[in-house]
Amino acid sequence: MNTKNYSLAFRRYRFVHITCYVVLFLSFGLCTIFPMTTMPGYVPILVGLLGIAALLWSAIGWIRILRNLERLSENLGKGQPGLSIARDSSPASILAKQCTETMRNSQGKIEESTERQNDISLKFQLVQKQKHSIEQIIHTIRDAVVVVDSFDRIVLANSAAEQVFRFSAQTAPSRPISEVINHHEFVAMMSHIRQSKLPHLKHELTIEKEDEKHIYDCILSCIRDEQQEISGVVAVLHDITREKEVSQMKNDFVSHVSHELKTPLASINAYAEMLVDGEAQDEEAIRQFCTVIQSQAQRLNRLIEDILNISRIESGLIKVDKQNLSMALLVRDAVEMITSYAQEKNITVHNPPAILYDQVYADKDMISQVIINLLSNAVKYTRQGGSISIDSQVNEADGIIRISVTDTGVGIPPEAVDHVFDKFYRVEENKKVAKGTGLGLNLVKQIVEKVHGGRVFVSSEVGKGSTFGFEIPMAAGQPVTTKA
Ligand code: ADP
Image (cartoon, rainbow, N blue to C red; front, side):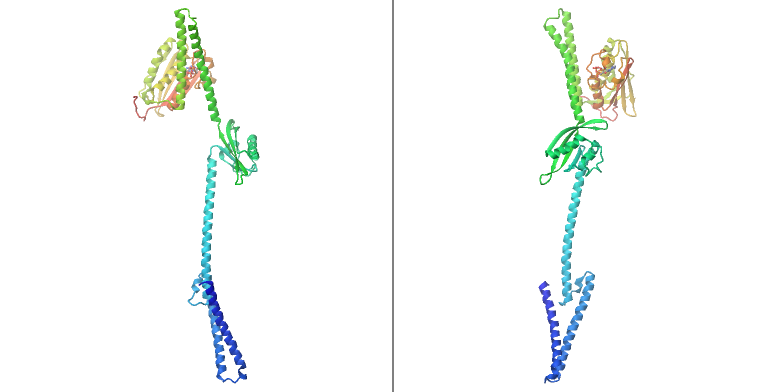
């Protein structure tokens, strides 16, 4: 039933009751004026009865309306106005219908707004989640990130920034950057880019961290809002200390290599020129000059070989051919190779007794090179009549084999011991004892540690001798392969 029908029903009620009162009023009026008329005596009785009937009709109507309204109010209290809907179109029934409809409408609206609220709360949760994950990403970035607003107050700083500038990222937000970060240059750069409105700024910063100077590649960028106004600045600091060191090392390496190559080349050049100029008078002199050229060419070759081998191992480009090998056999072969060299200097070489099981999973050529380098150094830096002993120990518990070469040579000063495995390092005091490139021990270290996962060691005493050696894992459990 629509509003028009409701008002029609009410109008009908109003009409009925007004009619009752009109009838009552008329009957009352007729009864009053009756004595003055000549109407027969039953007329007033009929009129009076009609008036009483109208009164009763109206009263009963009112009582019914009130009773229905009472029931409606009870049902409304229960939230079920629909129970008061009757077939007739009494006011209570009409009201009940209207209440039910209104309730239904409001229910619909409530459901709609609840749905909208749920939607908003879902979106809010999503935004919160996204914010959280963005913050997590920023916090897990290894580079330091600092964000400030247009008033140079910290908005966000990640854990890396906390470590670089040593502050607490939890208490930093909303505080001026100059209060939080104690690095004048960085703070000045942050406000400079904001004021100058540059989109980006790149700068190298040196920051002291744990008593060490670190170099950072610092990139600053302006953050702009929808109106393209600068709303803040973000700074990302990337630690390039290691890259700088590597680049420095590369430069040093190149200058070392060129220096080392120059010496034998200059010698070859000089002797070749003398030969060309006919400065060698006799055959003996010519042979002497050629021998020098040959030995310098060999030195040059050794140097280039060593450099190439080291760089191949360092870059991981070297072809490694590992197989199960007996360390005792490798040592025996190496000793054989240097025997004549040792005999020239009257040096005695003591070989270790063979060990029952000394299998290693290793590259034969590389490990032979390691043993030969250690043995030839021992001979090189031991004076006439000295002695060299080779020791081999197996640590079954750790699955490691340990080879050491001990000589009675010139020894190494304590301050130089830690550097002997460095590239191109030559002990100053021993330079006169023997010629060399300073690359042999570095190659040993690279082969043992990088290729075979072992370690090198050294101990030495000036005037008494040195012990150089290495440890590598034994072959247990390794697949057996054979060289093609
Ligand atoms: P080099 O070609 O100069 O021998 P190495 O890398 O083999 O280069 O050795 C580095 C330096 O370590 C040598 O210059 C030498 O001074 C020192 N050294 C190496 N082995 C011994 C040793 N057995 N006794 C004394 N000094 C040694």
